[in-house]
Image (cartoon, rainbow, N blue to C red):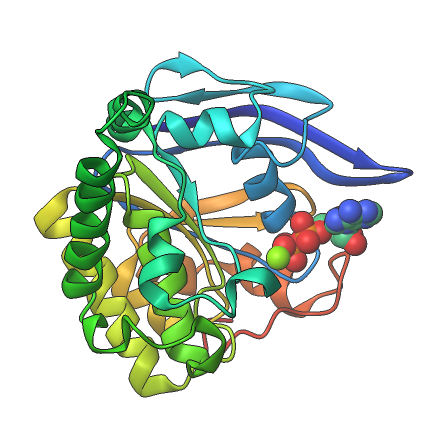
Length: 263
Ligand code: ADP
Ligand code: MG
């Protein structure tokens, strides 16, 4: 689904991503772990079109999409989570979903929108889809709440719901578990599993919580100092001496928050 080939990104003198190559298979939930400063978020921002790489290429579903802007990648089915922006906090959950611009399959909706008289019909369809997604993620009971009034965990589910609006091919999740309590984290993990299994969504997941990674992801890719150190099943990763070294010995940043003995 995603093929990253020899990507390089510099910030001044720092090589944040330094010749990174990896693949995310269609239908997989692929994990990306590594110490703080390894370049994980920078790589995600490049894949999602938020940052242009200094070198290398990105393929999405067999197409060279290197340097494409985010909105175009989104239309091609690449979705990523965003924190609910300030201006959306005063909109309801349902309105937040309805405001997601239509992707590939929604393009026709936008076109018919321009035709006189079709507006209400299309709005009904968008609303129906938003309600379906909220139902799938079991947060339909908060659909009329203002997004800003939700708990941290519910906001995470709304972020996930926003990516689901127009049937993405692949969803990038950057630390969806950050600041979320364990009960809700297990719930989010369950939703990701279900969307993957029942709806065929591919996920590419950055996460510090090793329990979540172990439960969800296969394979797990380890990044350190801007490139891939190793990859494999979580069991293989946990037993890998180089991985232990990357987390505990030096590295570029401070050691990652590896929990429950991954390192
Ligand atoms: P990770 O997500 O693995 O913790 P990042 O991709 O956030 O790592 O960061 C990789 C390196 O790039 C770090 O040294 C970080 O300080 C640097 N970096 C990230 N974004 C920027 C930026 N916008 N400007 C300058 N340096 C950056
Ligand atoms: Mg990061």
